[in-house]
Length: 200
Length: 230
Image 1: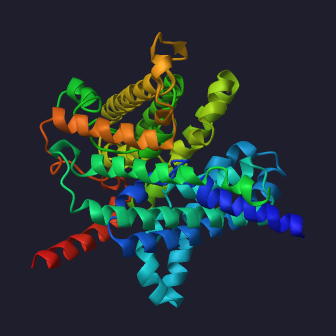
Image 2: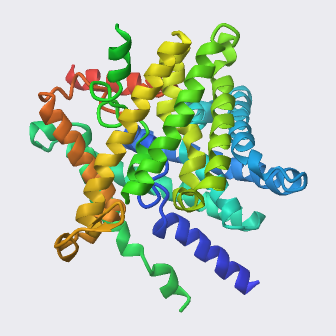
């Protein structure tokens, strides 16, 4: 039991901090750059991503092991996963709209965007590639979502300062945003090795 | 617009990476070495060409309401083919591109061209458009990976470069270097095209097929800005 908790903690910390999906694996850059202008939008997007990542993993993991592997159709993974994610997102949006309009109002607009977010497809495929079990997959995908939220929120803070900065004309807009993303990514280097350190 | 222009626009004037800022994830992630970048460029071009032609040929058959899922299925099919071919013939490249090969499915460039161009134009035009965009994508990846490999690792296409190895800046091959080089490249393009950042779509999502959904967010933030001004 202790062993399991330990390995789950390592997986969680790894996917939140060390291998942050946005800042060190470069997945989900589009929403990271596009929706991080305002703190509340960044947080909303982050929350929606956590939700969809967990849901997508819960749906795709059994499909991989009980359907694709069983019938020896591993090569269909990309097609099946993207369709499952797309259908799932639509379904969740409909359900939220009907039964939880308050939640839909705050998360709803971000949901359709997430279908084509490579971080969601990326995390489901990574979980299979890394050979994680169901529980490990869930922890790793929630960690990935938390890491995404963390990166978004941190970067939204940086960007609000950036608005008042006065960069050279050629750097205005996206270039200076990317350069500051580089510095934020650099700060995440400080977490490298943290996981090995915790449990000796 | 002439056929030639149609082909050329993707390479320079509407370069998908440096001007339209689409497909940023693979651009940042796999440009650590030139060979990876070229492999990715060719794979994405192949998928783009096939999907653009298929979408264009089927544009009168696919119902408007379910067009995005249809495009995704088509694209995912072609990506799977390319994946299997690369696994069989260039296993090393397949290994080093890893997950980003599957992620061509959600590359904004491919879905974006299907939605914005192929669904409205003929097969030949769509094929030319795809080739131009694909070459533009490959070119941008090539330039960026050259910078990162030469200055970051002191090699080019895996070949040692005299002296460069002694002064290599390792950070350029790592994650922060990717953001930094990409930012500088876009700034350079802005400078060369005469500092018109306002005219460009300044965020990647704008060219994405889900931009209309994104639009809700953009519009909202525009309203906020207007409120602030008032």
